[in-house]
Length: 253
Image (tube, rainbow, N blue to C red; front, side):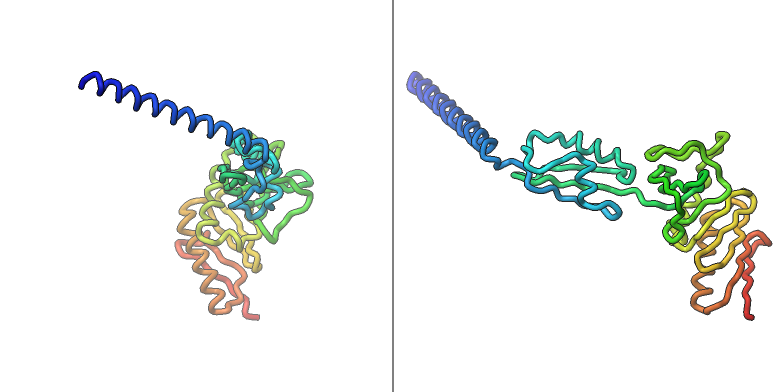
């Protein structure tokens, strides 16, 4: 009886081995045929998250191409290539079997520009240089005046001359963007830190004062502008540097 059980176990083990071998060979043959007939060749590359960049620009930056075997493509290298593009902050590439790639990116957004010699340096809120142009695009992003930068290069971070710190500018831009005020700003003068001047797109000039209580003051400024708009006031100046409460100057002529 014991001998019979041992034989049964050996037979079962042998059958499992044969079944596994057949499965392995079938998979191997299927894989070879699939590679040869192009079943796993990339037919399309989907792109998600692009706003400024076109789908074609993203695909070109990734280095990915169609008609290439999906398993031969290095997803890691594609992600590295994508992050080399100045407007791409984050990138993730996935396979969608049998024949597609999915590219998901997070773009950097232009938030300000700084004059440099006879050009304008465009940057995101983290002082990353996105592009350098000969003309300002004041309709899209504010110009920062009174700050001098050193030898800007696309893809590098902005460096202020004489080792000055750029964190105050970054913080100001970040908060202005958070309170939905940045899009209303035409230019910001940082020449004097104790008295920052802001020119708005609607013509209102703001004497912001020093860089203290920035979030409170910018939020307050946004509320004032909302009130000015609702009441249709002909506002010319707003002073934050003449006492505890802001002063609004209107022209009723």
